[in-house]
Length: 95
Length: 390
Image (cartoon, rainbow over all chains, first blue to last red; front, side, top):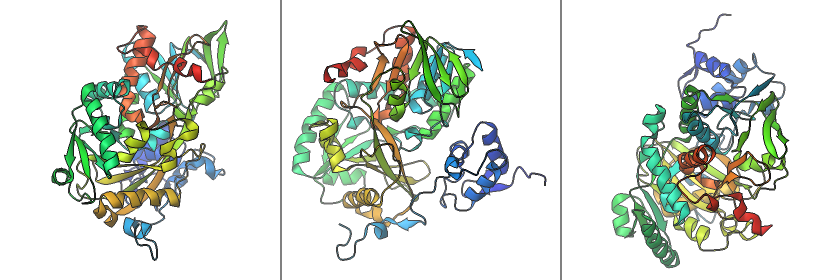
């Protein structure tokens, strides 16, 4: 299968496959390394779709059997949430 | 692989990157060695502030003012968009007690040359809408600034490479080679690099490098949890912190065992970046090398933010993260050669000031290594200042 280097991988930050391959060429061996070089996974959805695609691309260059070494960077919140809803306590309000 | 260079810099954070840039700019051959990847530790997990008002009057504030001056030309110098902007800053004051401390603090800052004033809450609201009417007042300085820390590191490295510097990522230092009490090289997972001078710029991990020559460095990782909101229209017009950040940081005992900020848990800091995301931080906790975020810590920060700027609770958060600020007992970085091994230089321990102080640190380190002297009294930053403690 030939690579379409301008295929969009991270839609939020408009990062293409070519840019991700270039980051790997520059030494990135983790999702975090690709993120720092390209901004991929840093947008509104925080990599919910592209993270898997990036791991897929990385798998051709590094051993992905040890997933802890990939620094995949999943963090709270799992979904976008309003601050109000995050700090509200039943019976106590926002304080 | 065995090779030689003038200077090896250990650590690919903002301090190592800056030092590599300033040393190569002056013609030194530098290899930067980073065990993971650049901006992988604290420098890639921080906010964006160059906040002069949080600095203690005296050497600390002088360093910050000099650094800020250097920032003005930095974007042009590096030829890289670092998003530096002098946006002004406010310290929000919640109680009369804090107001008393802040009045004295601001007076001393003015004497050191900082442009800063105290406003009542009515005047404060004129320059930043949405402040809680319960606040007692605020300071304002037009000089506070911010910068995109990731782009800053990339800028330093890119430019340093054009001066001949080399950057080795995924390369861990595993030993220091010495002979007759002098540095002779650095052993890494990818071979030995011969050098007469090395700079330990490993931030929170600097003690690991220090230990290789038997040094016990007084640097501890201190976790700062930060929240990032979705992109919103301009809302935070100036960088904002809460006065308890300062009153706790400087008016009381700061020793490792009796650290008030550590117990208080939060030094609130709020700022909005170029794209519209708002950074809301940060906890200050001693949690070893753990970089997880906690529900308790995040909620504590957000509750405090909502108390000072009530409208902020209507925004969505998209991410939380945490970085390890390299704490030192007196809040100042450790910069200078050590007595034990000739050629072993330390530049670490900036706690939350790494981004702010990166240009001036690069300047001081390059001057001390190349000229043997610098523009401030270097003794104030040397490791020896802690010797009486041990």
